Length: 354
Image (tube, rainbow, N blue to C red; front, top):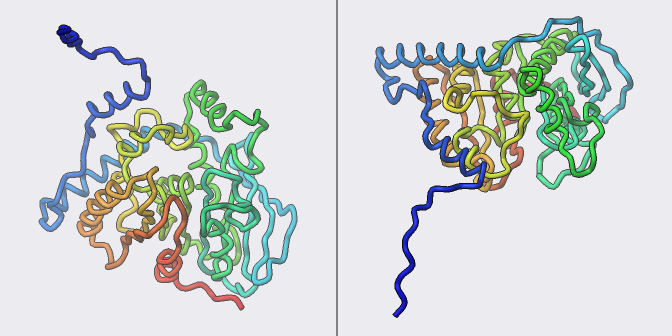
């Protein structure tokens, strides 16, 4: 009878991803959510103090901001889309960076009213959410749908997408090159795009048919990332829809091939979580969309994060219904079924066309 093979200790690893998973498992949050104590005065004080610390950490992680420049908005063309006009516009956000966008203006809009900054996710850019490109995911034309519902909508291209995409070989991903340059310069593509989105709010505020006190942001996937970060950092946002994003970075980090360098900040693991960002939106209205089959941002993590956020909203005295979690049958996609009436409620219903 053969002798059993000797047991060897498994201690060597060749996988970079596995090494990151080990490190992630060993990394706890430096300042976790203070827990279920929002109903007491002491708990409320603890949550408010924790929220202030979240804001300071976020500012540190984002780093320095560029110098402000005049936007010098230029209209390049216009198309009649039936119930609204789609203007092709361009404006500056830095001395060496401009943003192409579509500005959708309903024909029935006669006086200042609500407006939405619609942010696209990975894909062809602004054309997709304005209904000019085809997608397999349903409801991807949410900028178009918002304009049909009477909202003024600004839909920009993010860096590396749409008109802002540099030429790359077919097997090369533009965000990869961009993050290499950003790292060498000590900057973050996420922070750069967030700066551009804040400048988009400047452009909307300057529109004569927009009420600056009734601005919202919404987006799917990377657009959801920016919607959450923008609402957390800019109080001009009165309501936000975060679709296919909010869950937990620690959980999303476990999914192989799921990390895009444009969606992260250096040093954020263990220092910044989705609940931290959501707490900075509170008590302003926030709707989170989660597909049950969205493996990129898992539903259990999303439900846990929203449950913690409810305590923050309670502690800050938010109005009933200010935090909504729309869990739907589907995958990584925009839903909109609760989102559009949500905006109507909190921005004041926009005039309907047609």
